[in-house]
Image (cartoon, rainbow, N blue to C red; front, side, top):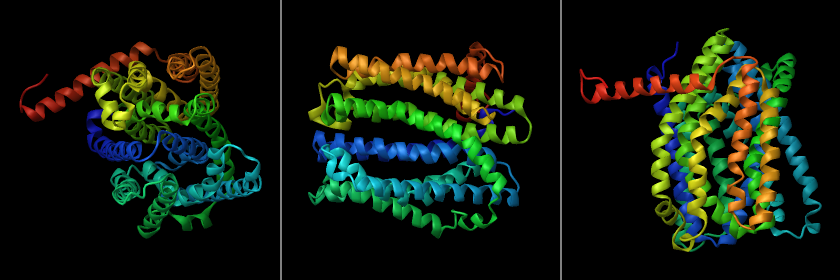
Length: 447
């Protein structure tokens, strides 16, 4: 049985990588909120919403498939998998570029300036990030978190530094921000080639049977990932069209601050997913359920002090991140609403990941589809009735509970468990971790 306390090095590297990126992200957003108008900030997030949808197609089709089919493989078999993934990634990139070229022909008919901006930069952004994204998947499967950290520092660190320089020179504009985003993607991809991390030559080892298997698996995880992205993007689109880009800028402040729970969640999901994939690929199915319970349970308890601290200091956090012009807005209370229900995020997230790992992506897709339907209907009703951002925030709990209910019954068909087991195992694992830390601080003593 795998104990989380024995995985501290892997977890530390994954957490450190996500921590660095989250700090960069928060600092970057803080600078942008001060340098750009509310409308420009909202437009930037609108672009990221569309860009995120395109990335969701790529990640959905190939990211989970890379970890699932590549982790734990022999060198030769692994190269065949990577070559097949490269082949599908290139085909998808070509399809996106063609789609973008077609959209260019109709830019004159768009009255919305935000849509024109998306069409202008969508294809270039997608193409520039492909080698970097592929490398990230491989490093996740190989659990080489130290290299993930360096690559992320190149990407986000460079962007943060140049934003600061542009602000100092009084040249920080939305157009320059889009150019910078494209340039840093190119730089990160260049380093992936320079460090020989892309395995591009593996494309010559691709196998038709593997390509078909990857696609058959990926078509469900693609739908799941796209639907998951739409869970976030739905808020972006509905706010932009119903309340305007300035309201979107306010709404995204608490979304950025939710990194305090998303950061450890992403770290544990990444390490947990690779551990479950290795167990599944080596016919240790029972171990998958053990990992699921430990990771989900431990994180649930770990979130409690984070949530309490966030609720108390919400107003201060909003003022620090957004500046004086966002003080007194709805942002702080929306942050508190999301924090309260984030305690259940680990259970929902690991439920979906486990369904993918045990080769049930269709069930995970159905779960996310239900959540998507709830969020769209709930948001439209909320905004129509309240005509403010609270209409969006208050729909969140209904979305979460719908996912928890559907996910529980879906996973139980293949790996029977009780929610109570997660909290019992999580509590025991929390005590083990605290005891391990305490023994290092005070040798010879336990909790």
